[in-house]
Image 1 (cartoon, rainbow, N blue to C red):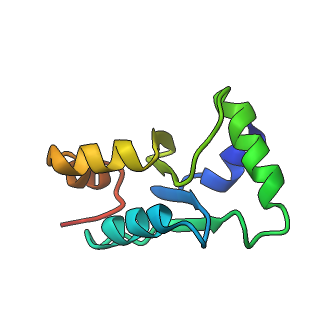
Image 2: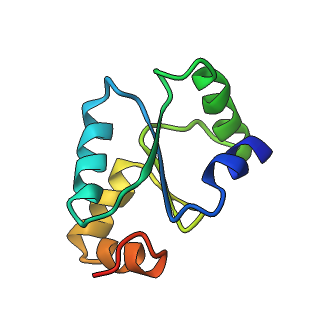
Length: 103
């Protein structure tokens, strides 16, 4: 859990992703379209990517799918949760509340 906490830290928006995953790319693109500048950790491009994936699973007590999106240091979820928030019109306000966007 400490590893994940250190990476998420006090950043308003963190996405654990894989560079070869089209769903991860779509979620990052969507979030960036709001003017956000997320910290993105590409698990498949990091030498410690497999360990980070295990740390996420240990911290959450469940299998983790990518993307794993943290907004305001809280795990929001993956693509289903992000898309659902977007469709409901709630994603922008969540990003604003976490100071990930300002408009």
